[in-house]
Length: 534
Image (tube, rainbow, N blue to C red):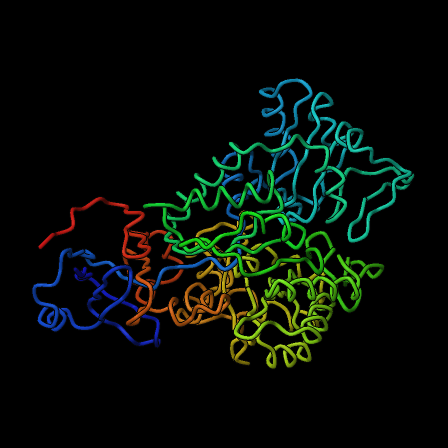
């Protein structure tokens, strides 16, 4: 028996001006869409359930094309300093945490952003030593490509003046050659390896709180990369399989870090909600810590072009590894130097037939590189919220001329390159409405300006499609997901008001998530109401 969804507005996203009245679903599939009266006549006597949208607006289910589900849950569980605007505020929060932490136990905090602090000063070991010398401290930067530790942490990790920076990473040093405690990219692994082992229960709890929050934000699908960072990769995969059972529904696409690929094979299975089809690797770091790989030096540091995580030969080997497993690759690329390396590799070793490689972040995209991407089966995995986090300081990093090819989302769409939208949570807030707003307005709601690079603003339809149809294309699922059409999955995000009718700066206040629907099942409802049964 079928379900009728009625009493509101339906935005199928098959075109900017397409609006329907009602949808019919059955067994998790969209069966019909159109005028409510006509659907009632056509399906007379076949409805076992009717769901009143109560004036709300139905969209295709929002999908986050790039996040870290466990990391998002972890952020919800531990000290988060990402909104703090001074080193003093951060250190005070750390001191309060230290007062509650047993002697010798680690203090872990997440999200520092020196660009919010006076003088853009990065905290170092001396700052953290003033917090505590009785606890090792790990303070992770908002981008997760850098972290700071105190003297206790350096001692445990055996990081001293005689230790060289590892390949693909950098240990910052003072004028005497002593480590400052600031570690970039692969150098972070020196500290991470001495952390206490994360147990299964911790990972499980992080996943549970994350899923609840994702549903609350209207998210019906995620593309997440977690298996390499917590506990044991194979057992973490088992936790994913165990979590998504029964009513706990979410369409989960797992990106598997290349170092975890072998480990998960022993437990990999066909699962109704969890798929492993893509291998993940990193080409460079991030612009904030000047570790994104550029083709020319940083404008504010002419001595550096950033960090290449792999040599070209090393990247080629990893792409060949993905192909041996029959997988496309998902490559973290921020700088144009890293993008050039990634394109060299995937051009030399093409993606398997019927799949698409994924290039994640893509903040600097030279025209010649865009021309190459147009010829490839690739999807560009964009994070619109980066624009409100990285401006205005990113102009200092890149310089005015290079900015013309940076954060250029409108240009990418106009050149008909496939694009998807994600949050990179916990780096940025997971709420898709914030990402959609950033793509449309290129500023925060309270800011009184025309937006950063206003010529690159997207339309509401373009921004919505990043988090719906574009995300489906990233996993070659555009025939079953991403729009509200006959034969596609019954995954919906229902908002209280229409994003097309409400000024974007008022979305956060007025456009609340009323229902999240996965596979015809309401997995979140803001206001419980009794559906009518025939």
